[in-house]
Amino acid sequence: MSNIVCQIKIISIDSINIQDDHNMSLKLVSVNLNLKDKLSKVREKLEQNSKVRMNDTLSFANKINNNNTGGSSLAEIAREDEEKIILEDIIDEKNNVLYLKSEPDLRYFNDKLKLEYGRSVTLEKANKKAFKIIDCEMSKIIDGYENSTIQIDLEEDKTIKNDFLLIADVDIPNFSKLGVSIKNSNLQNSNVVTNLTYNVIEYNKMTLKFKLEPTKEFIEAAKDVINSKDSRKLQDIINDFGQFIPKEVILGGRAYFIARENFEGNSGEHSTNISGQASNIKVEKKSSKSLNKKNSSKYQSFKLFGGKEVCSNNFNESEWIESLNDYKYWSCIKFKEPVSIFQFLPEDLRKQILILIGKKILYTNIEDYTYYLSEPGMHQVLKLRVECIYATTYI
Image (cartoon, rainbow, N blue to C red; front, side, top):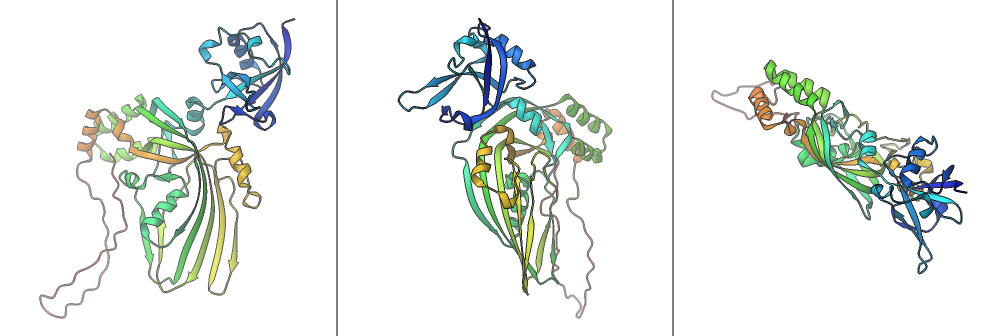
């Protein structure tokens, strides 16, 4: 009789070596299948099964025992070979187990992380899709574990870098060219000094490098602005399609333990006005507590990007890292090579946008200053407190 009840194991592992079926199993499903059916027909049946829902991320696999090591490995079966192989050839006859290997693919990540959408300077996903990925190089990262401690003082560049680091890691020198406008303020009358210490646990799992082309909708929007001859409408495009898009992203997980200490001192307080969270990165839990002293206070907080949801009190690093073996828990934790969305337009359109922008005032401000003229011809040099570090640029 050809029909049997199969135990289907859907697994996701980084290595082809199998040591413990129980630990690697993500799902166990019982299905009635025909041993004489080709794998292509089996796939059709499993696509309709509400518990399996077989898709492009799942492939059939043949379990091969290794007598020398005592372990086993999974040999994946190519999609084009499914017409040539029947179920009986790959099923584990002893236990009637059919293995399905769960592997990440671009379609899955694109649907989950919206990789074809532009981003704002705070990494928020745009409302409209500006690009189509026409090619993608996906590479697994070996030994992607990092554990580091970062101490932040009041230096301006470190403040900027690490405020962005709390959203996602970005390539700051290139990012600043895209028009990151960051306002700084110095509260000269304040005697409170803030020190930050970050303990960062990071696990890089995969890198995605894209080749992109603009969508028809984005191109038409650019043409409409050019025809209007109104440069102010470029901001509407940025609001709809984002300001930049990364050409490379790193997927994985990142955990932060942040210690903030405020204490009285003689120096002024420096603050940086950067806000917002990226929609593709989830902050799973955040907890805080304060320890008050006479002249100082300490605050500790916890943020998690990717991996299974936990709180700081129950955080188990080994379990969290283990959860990252399942690509469904990965988040974008690094944006590399950010490029203005206008860079991908055809050259003639980019030139017309440049002409439309023309010259512009990068910064303007009025400050009151009391000048005392004690002698005729006397002059003074005034130091302006410029609040814009990086001038906003469109392309």
